[in-house]
Amino acid sequence: MTLRPPPQMSSPKIVRDLFSTGRKISFAAGATLFRDGDPVTDVYCVESGRVVVTRYAENGERQILAFLFPGDFLGMSFAPTYNSAAEALTPVTVWAIPHAKLTSELATRPELGVAYAEMSARILNNVLDLVFTLGRKNSHARVASFLLHLRDRQELLALETERINVPMTRQDIADFLGLTMETVSRAFSHLKASGAVKFGSAADVDVIDLAKLRAEAHVGS
Image 1 (tube, helix red, strand yellow):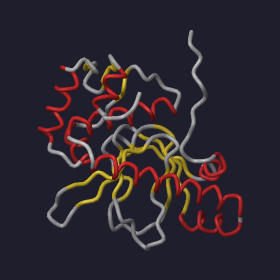
Image 2 (image 1 turned 30 degrees about the vertical axis):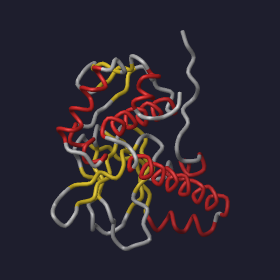
Image 3 (image 1 turned 180 degrees about the horizontal axis):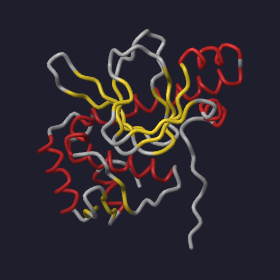
Image 4 (image 1 turned 90 degrees about the horizontal axis):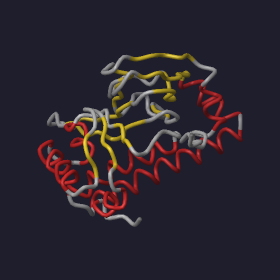
């Protein structure tokens, strides 16, 4: 039996400990945590499941901004209303604390403020890296990079990496990568034909050749 390392969460323990003093809430798949424009009341930390963060353009087109995993937090804003929406991609459990409590704790606990600032900086850097990466890649490389991103998150959570769980739809992936659903489907077919991956169940992609998948994503081994 192979021993896996302990999970590595994206948020520091001191931040998760604060959230664990809040309310534990469960959402069914497809349920809305909050909508764009709703008053900011609570801030959330994902305990289990997957959350999708979205924003809609004036013409009604949806842009997916992020897929969130256990340990990720969302809903923090210094504006009076949320500037994005969040819904449960799978059954989700979150910890919720009032926005006012978080801001009060940040103001009075320097060690928490430092941890929160470091976490926020990592999130911003990850977003900038993603924008830079996707802006320079073709559709096949974008989809391959997306699969590697999901694999990396599973590895950090001490989950298996030979099978990538992909609970999002092809349209979800398209709305995240700035592609059409048809282009995403063609990219998946290309990756399968290349021998990099094969499809398991409807929500799983098996990694057959990691080096080949990395090559398709235009990244080093």
